[in-house]
Image 1 (cartoon, rainbow, N blue to C red):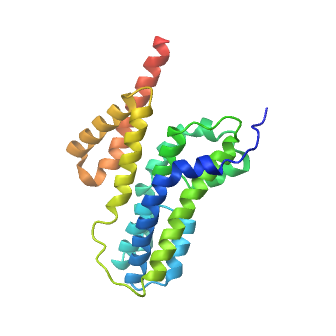
Image 2: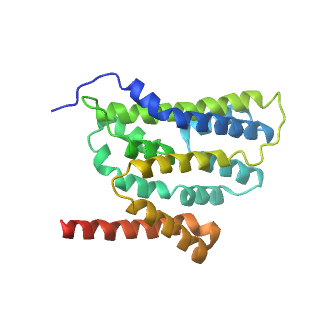
Image 3: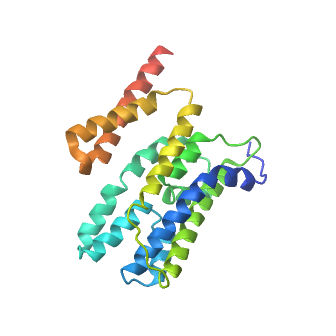
Length: 231
């Protein structure tokens, strides 16, 4: 039986408000950075529309300015966004019934969108596809809006942007804390913490993200198998 179509916007907007307050300022910082380095404002808009990856966009601009080659830039982007492959694996069942919206949901998946989708149940009598698409689309719009505003303002103001990009990390931390308080089991969070510490100690800060994801995924697989055996 198909989900009944009702207005999903109010619920989606309500839960994406924290992301809006994070994405728009950071998007503005990105737009300012693009024009600061002499690029046309349209590059900021196109990157946010077609790439939509906050950290990757900041890194891409830095690499271009540093004179990096195309191969180096592409490989860096692949490794930087490799974590989304692990995110996607855990959303296979959730996205299985989203129909034509599925390609967009996969393309526009970010850390914050993942946190909202996994941390908020779909309202009753609501289209799963519509709810997820609305959340994802709103977050995408917030980022595009911020980067466009920043790019357009870049020609008129000059300010120090040092440290502002950390707000994106802070936003994800806040969303993770909210999930921790509402989650039925705390093991995934403890596994993530342990994986991060081990990866930082043995792999170093440059390789920490990928190594911690691999360790964390292994721990969750083992945990899930043990839970099934117990049941």
